Image (cartoon, rainbow, N blue to C red):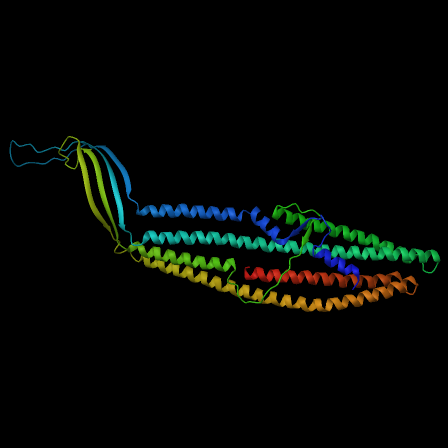
Length: 420
C-alpha cells in the first residue's frame, strides 16, 4: 500500500508532529462531566440526605415546648350548695398559665427507622439519576468525537486526491506542451481541482461546526489544529447489562416502594411516649386557688389506631401495583438493552470482516489507478477515464477509514450499552 495511506492512518491515530496539541476522549468526558456539575449535584444530594437523616433522628430526642395561655371568660363555674349560709368557691374569670411540655418517644412502631429507609431510597434514586444523565452525556461526547474524526478522514483523503491530481496536472501540462495529449485533459484536471477545493471547504466548515459543539459541551478550547486521538478499544462479549444506570435506578425505585410499604405498615402500630408538664399558673390545677401555684404532671401516653377503615391495606395494595409497574419497566428496558447489545455485537463483527476485504480492494484500486495514470500520460485514455478510476481509489480509501472508525464506534457503543 502506498505511503499516503500510512500517512492518513497516522494522522487518524493522532500521531502528530512535536508541539501539536492533542486531545483524548477521556479528557473530553472528564471536562464534560465537570461542566455539567455532576459531582456538585451528587454532593448536594448527599448534604441534603444527611440533613434529612438528622431531622429524622431528632424524633428520638426529648421535645420541649413552651406553652403559655392567658384567657378571660365571661362566666365562671358556680356550685350550688344545699346548706344555707355557706358560700361555694368561685373560679376566677381569667386564667393565666405558663408551662413547659416535655415529651419523649419510647416506642414508635419502627416508624423512624422506616422513614430513614424511605429517605435513603429517595437519595439513592436521585444520585442514580445523575449517573443516567452522565451516561447520556458520555454517549453524546463519544458520538461527536468519532464523527469529527470521520469527517477529517474524509478531508484528508480529499486532500490526498487533490495532491495526486496536482502532480498529474504537472505531467500533463508538459505532455500538452510536447503535443502528445490534447489541452482539454489539462482543463478537466484543473476543473476537478477547483471542485475539490469547494468540497474540502464545505467539509472543513462542517467539521468546525462539530468541533464547536464538542467545545461547547466540554468547555474546552478545541481549535481546528487540535488532534482528537482515537481511543484504543477492546470488548469481550457478555450479555450483562446490569451495570446500566437506568436499570439500577429502577431497582432503587422498587426499594423505595418497599420502604414506603414498610412505613405504611407502621401507621397502625401502637405508639408509646412519656410526657411531663412543668410550670406555674394563676390559678394552677386547683382553679379555686386564686394565687400563683406550681404545676407539674407526668405520665405515659398510648396511641393505637385500631381501625382505619382499610386505609393502610389500600395504600399497601396501591404501592404493590406501582412496584409491579416498575418491575415491568425494568423487564422492558433489560430486553431493549440486550437487543441493542446483540445488534452492536453484529456491527462489530461486520466491520471486522469488511476491513479484511477493504485492504485488498484498496491495493487493487491503487494498482489500477497507476496503470490508468500511465495511459493518460501516453494519451491512451481521456482525463475523465482517469478521474473515474481515481475516484474509485479514493472511495476505497474512504471506505477503509470509515469502517475503521465505525468499528471503534461500535465497540465504544457496546461498552456504553453495557453501562461501562
